[in-house]
Amino acid sequence: MTLHAKSICLMTALCTAAAFAQMTSARAQAQTAETTASTAPVAYVYVSSNPNGSSTNEINGFAAAANGRLTPVAGSPFRDDVTSMAVNGKYLYASTRNGIYVAAFAIGANGALHWSASTDIVKYNQGDCGSSGPLFLDHTGASLYDMEFNGDACSNNSYQSLATNTSTGRLHNLGSGASGEWFYLPATFIGNNVYAYTAVCLYDMYWEIAGFKRSSGGLLSEININAPTPAPKAGDFFCPSQAAADTTNHVAITFQPVDQNSFSPNGPAQLATYTAGSSGNLSTTSTVANMPAASVGTVTGLGMAPSGKLLAVAGTAGLQVFHFNGSHPITHDTGLLTKDQIDQVFWDNDNHLYAISQSAGKLFVFTVTPTSASQAAGSPYTIAHPQSLIVQPKTPRP
Image 1 (cartoon, rainbow, N blue to C red):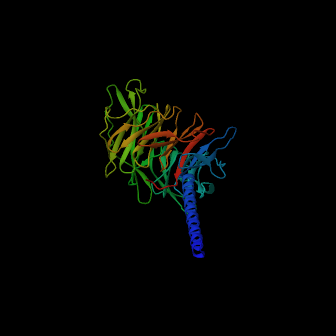
Image 2 (spheres, helix red, strand yellow; image 1 turned 90 degrees about the vertical axis):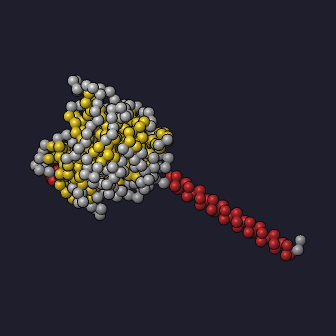
Image 3 (cartoon, rainbow, N blue to C red; image 1 turned 45 degrees about the vertical axis):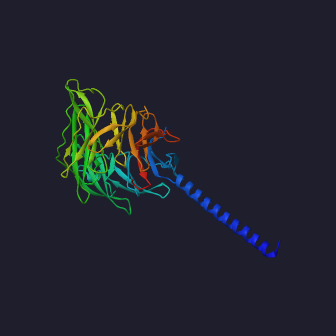
């Protein structure tokens, strides 16, 4: 072989080796990127609970992977004596168990919580009475609302409006323009972030569908609305109990049929859909014939998926998911995903549905799409005496 031929062979071998090395490097980088994407958290999940033998509560923090598997975040559990929680991307707000304060915790890049500030809520009430309860935020996270028990002149429950400070987490009182002796649940905002609604059924006797309007400054005030109830079957009346809004102008409301004479439940709860008008009034085409019945027993909570296409219904007999179709009738999707009592549900932005069972001491994770539903790997997780659940998505809303 001539020197020239040997040189060509050597150069060819070197080029082939270099090309192979580049391909291997590119493949390794792609695999690394794929592995990172599959393990990077899509959400942080927080559960307040009361550990066995403890006189104080704590917050259990988890990072949720793309497949729904949960791993504890650094420092979890956090020894903070809180109950109800809400998140706005930067802070986790929580009602303290004594009902006096709402604490703000900065959410770290890895999901860890760091106390930032505590705001005395009771001092804003006439008579220095009341107790901080369920918390919820507007869609922007600029306004926090505290459902306070006996917060209005030491009698009625009320929604206290609070402005959030993005630098410190401290809260500024905006006042209370919404109070009523029957309120006890968070309200739910429709897509315009102006109107919010709640439904209440007390003792299967007293009921109300209430509407609220948020001012440009964040104050939430009750407004008079029209919200006709579907006609029940003969001998019954409907008692609305839960509400959840989609991302446009529709609201799902559960209705419990109640016997007019005995004031006891008369069949499973049914699901209606309402459309909010420009002035906040609600209208519906739901009827006793087209409202699907839930199999969850007494309804304890609703959760609207970020897509507005799925509705989770929690109850004393389990958890079920329905197709939500805007102003059109709600339709069945799944059977019972679990038969444990479910007390609270939340979605992330990656098709995961999270649920806690206080009586069973469990945290469930399900992967749910319009065409499938399955329990995520590792679910359910055991948590002693879970109190409240909140989810902070890491990926943008679909």
